[in-house]
Length: 307
Ligand code: UDP
Image (cartoon, rainbow, N blue to C red; front, side, top):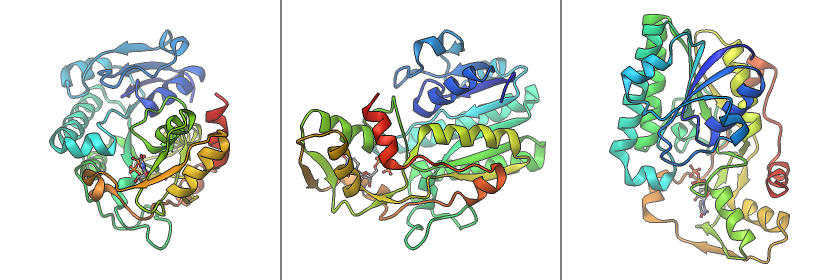
């Protein structure tokens, strides 16, 4: 993508800041909307090149003003992190619903042709028990976070039917990479390994996740934004399943740490969120773009430790 004007809501967050960095480097005009609730993860040289606005995405009037003449709105602002979401289910839903209402209004008033929305693989609930999940499977959201994301996916589908605003809902599978904070398991384990503390594996550690390196996720996001018409849902997944036990072992060996692995019960509030297996199919992504994520977990961790 080049020479476009884009808005990124949540652009100071983990995935949003990587997206901002790539889009600035490709020669796009980038407008960021973020409350800075979790700080600013945009690297300074990139921050100097974006137009930054400390605005709540739910502020319809401000968002509408900022979306004038925009080609794509990347709507990535959200409350996330299992612990935070589990403590704040009402606010999680409110942020999703109000945020999407204001983005949809802004797109409609300003005739913005496309919205790219950060959905979640959490929507699949317990469905990845035997095989990787594809986008056609009937979803099973179990938590306020997944429910809110699913609600917005359906809303975007109707918005396309009713108003012709094109959109993508991207179901991200455990994205990781530089600048992620320790709400998520990889930075948490890395921090523990580097300080010689035990790595806190919840339960048996046999639960699996599909860890997807952030640069790959950004490549996929931009290619999809350029190539796909209408309303579509895409998994952004690495298609490789790793157990949390394996993850802990790999992190200890990649960092030459003396840490041990400690198996403890997950905090009670995580119970509804804990799924036994989660891994996704990237077939639809590859068909649409010719690309699929390629960085293995081991390679991704090496990049992180060498940073
Ligand atoms: N996890 C863990 N120890 C921790 C934090 C997380 O074993 O200190 C596990 C958690 O039980 C889950 C996986 O790591 O199975 C991924 O957790 P995260 O919160 O990063 O993302 P989720 O997939 O739950 O959205």
